[in-house]
Image 1 (cartoon, rainbow, N blue to C red):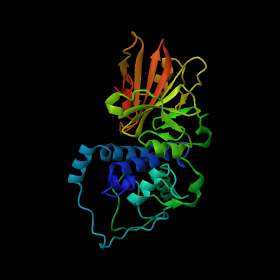
Image 2: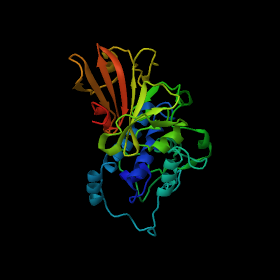
Image 3: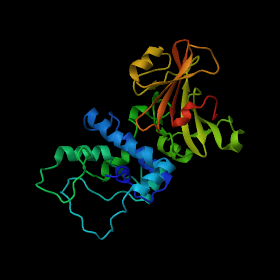
Image 4: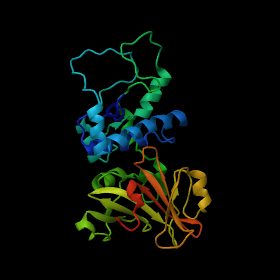
Length: 317
């Protein structure tokens, strides 16, 4: 499978479509939602992240496209082993619809992720003596996302972690507000109202803005760059709710808890205080989504999640 097939988009897909498809599918690989083993979930998630790392970068995508063989003509006969799950890849218009409708729902129909489809095939596929086209050794059988009638009520975040009472942060975002989503799509996906809080509006003529959740905790804020959510940040403070990452590290925890839960941490100095205060940064495989921990006095005082903008030191700088 090539990177386009892994993400379920065609080779003419624009950047927004690729972002939306990745956002939908990677969340379905989360251990809380994936029906298989953690090893299977991590394997399929790694394939998605590797594909997105290439297709989400314009320069790397151009190089990849140049090396990729031309797509076979639509009329060319192709034979393959029968599989229990099969459907055409979602069109660009469908994925755009996912984005407009909150990325996660399209007219009451949801998208079955690559993770779930591949796991289902692994469990149900019957032996086939020979096939004219076989995937490379080590790759999961090619499966495109398929509509599922149960998807209308599902979300990419478990029900206990939606709304203003959500206290779980992941590398992708918070409470259904996904990094990379437009403001409108984030509101539709999360059922929350977010608005400009008046910060950073003079930076680059308003290209980078600070946002807040109406009726939500004042200790959680977002950065919006060129109309898209790039970072969600939560801070500790008097009376502030305690936010926790999906690996169990909470505001107020000792620095050692971060090192116990995350490996390959990148350390940066805190420009506003002296050592040993610092920033600890972890990126998911593919390097497109991550978490930054602000460490002051040996404790976690802030957690930032989202795109590589988590490395900003002040606002959008």
